[in-house]
Amino acid sequence: MAADRTPPSNRPEGPAPAILRHLRGFQLIAGSAWNLATIDWIEAQLEHLGYPDYPAYILGACPFGAVVTTSCLDSG
Image 1 (cartoon, helix red, strand yellow):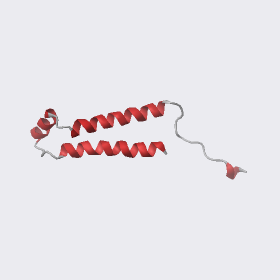
Image 2: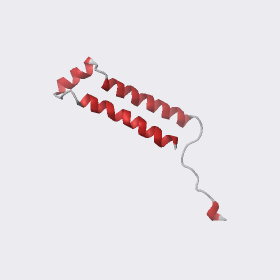
Image 3: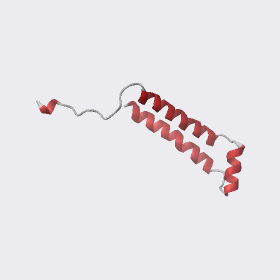
Image 4: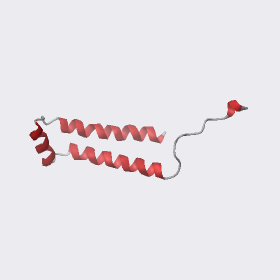
């Protein structure tokens, strides 16, 4: 009956992985909001580096997409 055996899971158990997933999500959402908000410091840094205005929106949208993706992957 060896065919009935399932391989052991490599996922850690306990509350720590869930806590770390929530912290990671919060950090990514905070970074996304920081880049999407029109903060003068961000605009000044991008202007100083010679970038146009739109990279801040790209940099803000990517972490938000990462939160959605990892949340969907971790919940399944």
